[in-house]
Amino acid sequence: MIRKLLIANRGEIALRILRACRELGIATVAVYSEADRTSLHVRFADEAYPIGPPPARESYLKVPALLEVARRSGADALHPGYGFLAENADFAEACLAAGLTFVGPSPAAIRAMGDKIQARRLAQQAGLPLVPGTLDEVADIGSALATAEAIGFPVLLKASGGGGGRGIRLVTQAEDMAAAFSSATSEAAAGFGHGGVYLEKYLAPIRHVEVQVMADRFGRVVALGERECSIQRRHQKIIEEAPSPAVSPALRSRLMEMAAAVARAVQYEGAGTVEFLLDGEGQAYFMEMNTRLQVEHPVTEMVTGTDLVADQLLVASGEPLGYTQDDVQLRGWAIECRITSEDPYHDFVPSVGVVRLFHEPGGPGIRVDTGLYDHMEVTVYYDPLLAKLIAWGRDREQAMQRMRRALREVHITGIHTNIPFHLYVLESPEFQQGQVDTGFAERALRAWQRQEGEQVDVALLAAALVAYHERRTGTERPGGAPGGAHRGRCVNPWTLTYRPGPTAWTRR
Image 1 (cartoon, one colour):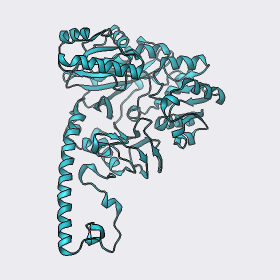
Image 2: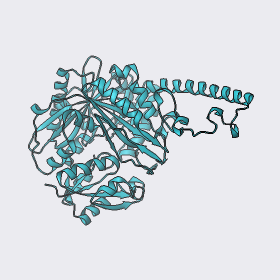
Image 3: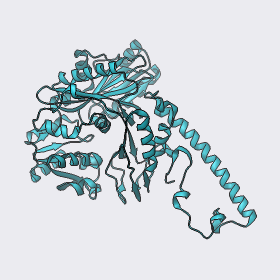
Image 4: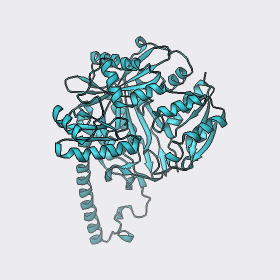
């Protein structure tokens, strides 16, 4: 059994791993950059070590610093979390060479699935249908054009070593190929150290559905149902749910069989996710496999009753998986909203500053995974994810009701968040009916921005009329602020910052 675990990550995922370790009796070691000195994962770990300045490349991505902390602390295992070095095969190899247990798949499996072209080949060999496209990198603009014309526009250029929505460009006509090819290869080289891209047919409308798998070193692979991940903005997921409202029991069985087949093809070990595109006819196409724990793993935990992080740790310790495919039963419905430090009123620009107040929701069926606390400073250095809000219900309707209630209970002041947009999506007829696709969030955003603009216009007109009336009647407040009716009594500051409708409370 793992005795002491170094958590090579930060924020809410570091806390999530810490909690699993506490329940299993595993000692924990945290690492932190100068910007994270007062973070909760640092306070809650048994030991914590500084690893460098705030930029990730000088701290959380510094492999020698992480391995030195493991040596100094006496850790015998390392969990990479997600992001940073979680899908870096060289890092996994370095951990093994240093005598550490790497909580994740083998370096060979990471490489096989990290190379999207090789992953497509393996999936095809395992009998999975693929989106029409190339099984090799496109060498130049000419090759890309020839392939695009053969399969038909529109097409996607995708980084062969990519992930997280980077290195992807949509090309709708031949005239745009040169600029898109240059942009995609440059972003791929900067983000992944390799500028190779491949080409796929762009399918729309389409859903993004993924299957969670867990496997041990004895060959047991279990698929834990699917997640609906179609609500995304710029290829980044915003809201996820399990199960998917578009997946029938028969399709679910087929998806889980295909996901397990891919995992077996690379002798997978640990937690992984096989991602599919699903068209309106119920045809599923293999897209890729993520060789790590996913941000949205809590919705699967809520409907299956599993602890995926504990399973990761036990499997990495050499234990057999404690359940079989026959044991997997989906119970109820779960929805996750990613709460980020972005300003939806200004095209989701990052919002940084000090969190003056954080009040998290509670009540039946509500789970909050977060590293947020009062007076915490949100910086520009890391991902804007502040918290993951998860709601469980006996069915989808109850899960939606609980999520809307919980979103209205969240109070975060000092910075802007995307909560108003979450509420708009949750209250939209399309979401409530489960009729969404990967383009839904962008369409909803445009509609919401139009609505918000109209509300602002009405509010400004109303304020002008009130100010004019008070000036005419002599009830104007000092400094010209309206509100003579409140003279001489305390005004609730929440009232002054309230925005009516689905936007709820927000600091403006």
